[in-house]
Length: 89
View: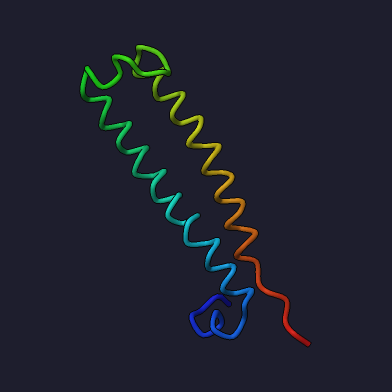
């Protein structure tokens, strides 16, 4: 289990914590960014020069495509890092 006590006793726990913190921050950022995109759609000038196209649908498709890919990679890394450490015999 990854707790503060386990991190002090195990260097592997410290490594896992170092990997988990930035990935968790990245996932929170992706959620915030998705919200900005949805709310930005309410402003007609928000998508004028968007690289996804001049329409709201084109912009959303491009932003959510990269959000999905980055989110899937971060979630996969979190899943691997959160696996239990092998017990020392």
